[in-house]
Length: 125
Image (tube, rainbow, N blue to C red):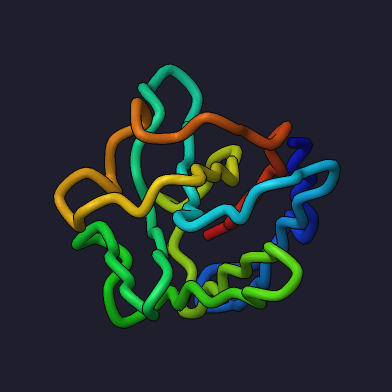
């Protein structure tokens, strides 16, 4: 499975970006798909994830500003990011797993088997 993320860029604080991640080469359905981010000098952190059945979960810092969605038939996941803040600046990675994780596990990097290459989001103040 290959994941390819698109949509990063430079935006002013308060602006919006939409990230996309498409999976290819798979022969299994990717039940859980998510987004993580890594800022310079920091560890990779969970942002949002979605699971079959429409279950979604977010890190507290993005609730109300970010929305994750997916096209199940194509194993494609999106991250709509509104009201962006400078602290959202990071490389954003999409991730996927064929397993249908419980909500508490969806935020762990260990639950994901496949990772995209990352796309840089820069929010200027």
